[in-house]
Length: 89
Image (cartoon, rainbow, N blue to C red):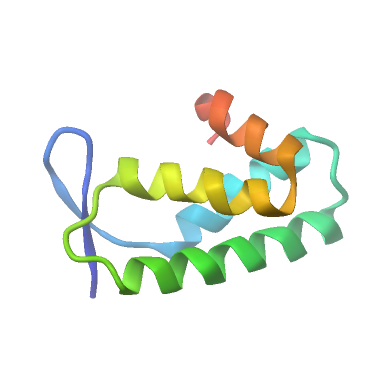
């Protein structure tokens, strides 16, 4: 199982569910329907999962930045919410 390096240098098991959950919260905070949020977050989670598999050592900050890029390709409003409202995650 893949591990990521957290902000304080602690290693944690990579969990795609966290990516999905934070994306989903951002979607709902931009007033997307649950159905649209599930669809978008499924796309984002799949792309991030593939990206992580190709990386060597990876940090949570790397994942955060990549998620913003991937979400922005699908929905700029959700990407903005995700980027600027980390506390909703």
